[in-house]
Amino acid sequence: MKIIIRDTYEDMSRQAAHDLIETVQLSDKPLFCPASGDTPVGLYKELVHLHQQQKFDSSNWLFVGLDEWVGMNENDEGSCRYSLNDQLFYPLKIADDKICFFDGRAKDLTNECDRIENFIQQHGGIDVAVLGLGMNGHVGMNEPDTSPSLRSHIATLDPITQQVGQKYFKKQQQLSEGITLGIATLLESKHIFLLVSSKRKAAIVKKVIEGDINEEVPASLLRNHQNLKIYLDTDAAEIIQH
Image 1: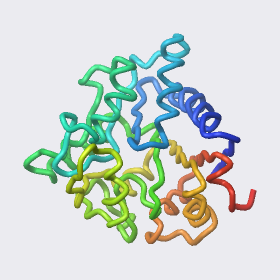
Image 2: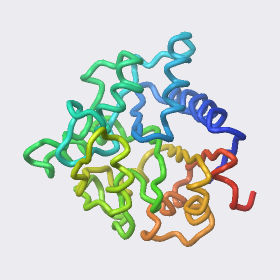
Image 3: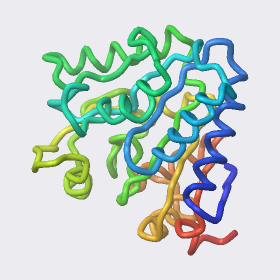
Image 4: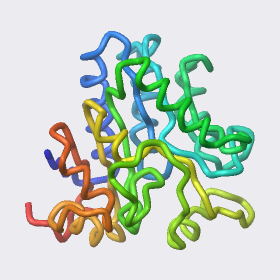
């Protein structure tokens, strides 16, 4: 585990973006798993900025989705795919056939899980997974007390996740379930970047980094990964020892 602390959210995002490009270039045809949510947005902005300056070539990149709200897909404003289309896929001009993403509107969600897992296996595993951290310690939609042996699965969402998730939508939504890569799948990634910012996440950051490794705090399970980098701004790092 390597902890990288920067003074501001913007500095943290820039550092993560540059490290991501450097890491992805280790693979001929990299598979990148980007999280949606507020925290990775700065990283994606920096990627788009660098791409516009022709600092890197993403034409050989492949993408796999981390998670999606059950009952939604890219046609639903506020969905995970809709947000990533806006922040990353469209600005980088990523062709649709380079993206494999959960369809939360699919009739057979178990089949969706199998489809995503097969895509990952067919392309040699995830090279880099970029993750955010929930207030309750979740990553993706792996909620507290989720078994770390699970692969892609349908998740019952914690009340905190249901409540916080409303911020992505203009009107109240039913957010009772999600479909997500499991901890077991994420731990097979070659590299994991966990990004966290703001004072309100400081307490959960301390649990993730300094607390027990257990499924009550799903993100703590990532500490078992040999290539985990945790990116924090000074606010998020406020109460950890460093």
